[in-house]
Length: 378
Ligand code: SF4
Image 1: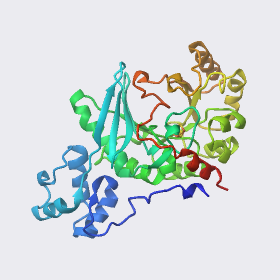
Image 2 (image 1 turned 180 degrees about the vertical axis):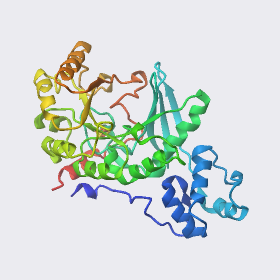
Image 3 (image 1 turned 60 degrees about the vertical axis):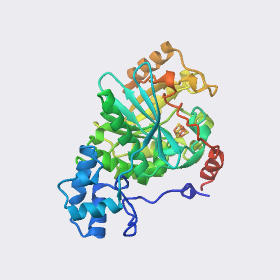
Image 4 (image 1 turned 135 degrees about the vertical axis):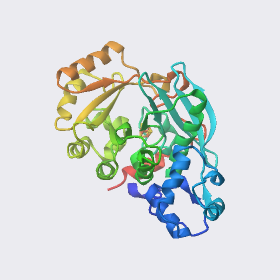
């Protein structure tokens, strides 16, 4: 069974719902919505721009208030257009200000969305799937298994729910990362639609350089992402040998280091938009002196900056956090070797919002089966 056999929803921008079926505004990029409006109502595609501005710019979802649309058109939209909102099931606030939301996206499915408070920016971390099939051994989300992909609409419902809630805090976010629950590139069509809306100046209007999509290293999807999505990419490397990487990240059995690094060397990055190499430091597992020696060589030719993430042992999966001095030594040595490197200590640790800790109560253990199917791919 191939990776493609894991359920992949159709890209919603390309689908043409039957006339009179509900039209979900959040499922479409502006161009796709314009086509849909023309097809259904014979209205000019620029009506989609007006709808985007009402919903995404002004935060108004009441069609009756959309005064620049004709009364007749509004009446038809009231019958068919739906503008869903993610329902915030719960919200926890960390001592460092980070807010972790449990958002009900559809039919009782809960996903986690985190607003990370930082000194000079706030970053929204969104989920791309309910659970995850990738089975990384250091990740709590992996223990849920994959329940399903999120649709583009469900991804954007998280964003809209946090935008609405943030008004009561007087803040918002400046950056978006797809690093919540799930492997985003396993759900690439819907990620692509969501990024189009996020970066649309008539939509949410975030600069592409402020959006980062992470991946565990799905090689064909990285190639496709680089060619079709105007956002940054972050790749979880997390080891310097196939032996260790396969132990902690089963995906490495399907796409070993050599294949992964080759696609990264060919990746269409440039000096301003380098690939972020995420390296979760699991003390005594992947942060040995030998790993430190090998890493710069592995990254030769990759337009990369390295993000060291000391493991958050609160996840309770048997791995240890490296000592701060050891992390500092890694940073110093890599820097001496000419590698651009930063350290990211997880935020929101007291509310389980940190990397690798996202886990919802509705999780089901389907992961093993999905993972075995993926790894059996030829
Ligand atoms: S680290 Fe990411 S890709 Fe790996 S299991 Fe967790 S959510 Fe999935």
